[in-house]
Length: 423
Image (cartoon, rainbow, N blue to C red; front, side, top):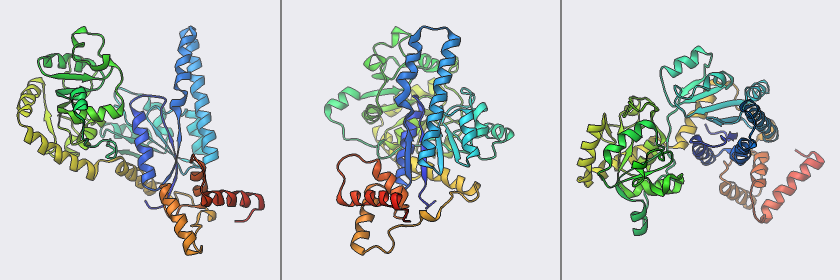
């Protein structure tokens, strides 16, 4: 959609959906929308601090729920000041049922991107009916269950990559030594992965990520003593590795290679880095990549055979990774996902977004030299040329540093209009 929107992105306190929320924020700005973020992670330390009180389990649960209610009220306060066209929440964002009910009563459109496995994380049952739009990374039977609950505006929205961040890198020799290996895996030590990867100990194998400390057999392979890896270093690992393993998680240790449906973000991020990967077969994968763009495996024997083959066929690795890279850039970016979501909302919500008379293009009729300066400033702020004056002022107030003469004049004009009521 072409109309610039005011969008409030509500991030979770922590977790895997947090970086996805930041990619969404960036993508929405790139699409020309005015984006404000509720920075829930700023409150995470205080939330975790409740656990140090040494109180009963019941009392701690009460305090944690009360804390989350305060955050929900803070989101409502942010909504009142920002007046968004849409409140977009990521999975596990701190928005209570009461807050969602209030937003619906105030006719504020709400959407959640539930980037979780619905079978494992079941809290969606309590919250999905309260969102106006509910985007998910799985199809059936999840969509049918949502429809049965009255969620008429549910849509399948797979994950993606940010090609400005997940990209091929020219690594230094030191980075290649530090992050490189024949085979690597980046992710948490789920039970199926711990059992599966014991069969790979004979390779030049590096494991990056957390939750691998319950078995000392992994100590020689786990990097940095199992500390969390930054997104920047993750991209370096992807680029430096010959064969990146992408084994989806399962809490069942007997299910080494899970036969699942959703496709994790690592699939898209590795492809965006033009990095070669071996990924376990997923029901939804053929909808996203062609067979010649990704190499899949069905079980551990198949995985080991393909590791051995592709370690000595570097040209084939590069050719396949190049095709996957092209597919991600064309179809699987966060900008594309956000455009799909907003188009879906526009189609389903009559009269959305609401536009007021004051939201018309404000610089029409200005002298050409002033118009040119304003358009340059809008571009620098990553705003659409038809952004309203109110949104223009909001964006300016979010900037840091010394104001230019034009920026000072715009803010002065805004205050003058407030004082004298000039429209």
